[in-house]
Image 1: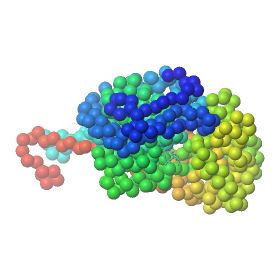
Image 2: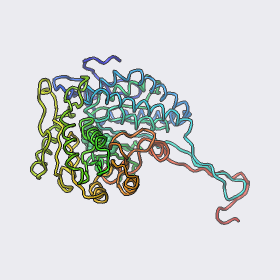
Image 3: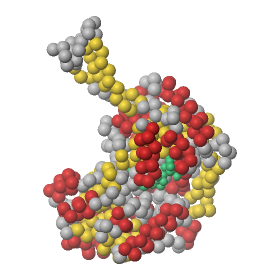
Image 4: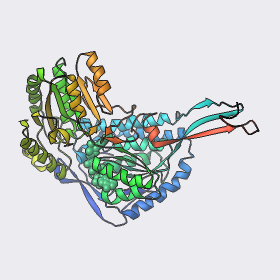
Length: 501
Ligand code: NAP
């Protein structure tokens, strides 16, 4: 699995075989740091490819659900070992296809490794409850059972970690899968599925179908023989898919956008807060669902914070993520590139003060890619569009607050509720923030990013609906399995609960 500059010809993976789309058509996946480099040629699938994959997954379900969970776990463990062995080459592939800098891409692969080992262990722990009955000679318990055939739809910003977050728990719980990755990162998706095939997954258990969301994605979500859907992506797409699933009475979990914020109080360690704001705002070029796109700063330190934040932002080096010296890579594609530049114009028109960046970055070889300067607006007010709408790029708004309660109100005045953070040395302020911030995740003296795989992950409001990803109980295991309750009466006579005393 050596990663050079080669172009890959990827295929669908259906019933254990690598096959082209029935249409015989293809599309290209390109390197966002260099539009002239084709990373892969990908099958443009349609409904009939999904039909074949669903049929294979339905058939495989009958044996996979009966395979003991510890045996399923052994395959996951092998997959994690193969990922570990190939971490660097997979990271390089990810940098070429998605654009994030290599250390971050390798972090993405590490997340998949962690999830593989964690879920492998869960194979020996998929425990339910055994509780005493109120009647004699009767026992009762709850057990986890799979949901059946899962359709999984993923975005491009974590091309290996997010599929791993869904595929590993779905498999350990005994489901079979049709995986539809983002069109922008199809090659990474195929490389990840190759790992699972190599680890020994039986045919039909995991099927990969490439193609556009509007065509194959929606067909998959609506397919009559699919039992449940897990989606990560934008709010607009997620809401649309929730409506389809609602009408079909089909379980769906949606993880969607964010407009995450960091509060910096007047007693914060300022340099630490600046570092956190840089990492949260410009890490992954601002293309994380948990990116810190709003920094809410106490009025007493506002000026000082702005000076240091601007200085740190101006030191970021932009370029190809494979180069060691690069701090920030390109954005994913042309439509995101145009959308982000439009938001910068919106910010200027709204009266925010542009203090850093604000343009495409086209120096040297960067003219071949989708590069945008790290951009900071100060004097942003909470109702401005740049403070309300998800931009998903390297654009950060700094907002002034008079006191903690106002800062919390500003953070909460958002349609989204994924992640938030507070920098302060006051323990009471941390307690209030922890209690009152309306987000799925709260960080104290750390940036809005950095979730670990063994706690549940997900947001509220427009950031998510329903169950959580990652974690064990209360998280991914509850998403990818359902409870069945068993009562066994061995008294040999009719016993009536609540009536016989
Ligand atoms: P997106 O446009 O919604 O696409 C996500 C996935 O859905 C892609 O595989 C896409 O396929 C597919 N899709 C698009 N339209 C569809 C339809 N009508 N039916 C079925 N599938 C469809 O989002 P994105 O641009 O890839 O990702 C960025 C978004 O994801 C941001 O909003 C970000 O905040 C969010 N995100 C959230 C989390 C989280 O955990 N909360 C994590 C990461 C990202 P194509 O690629 O073929 O269009």
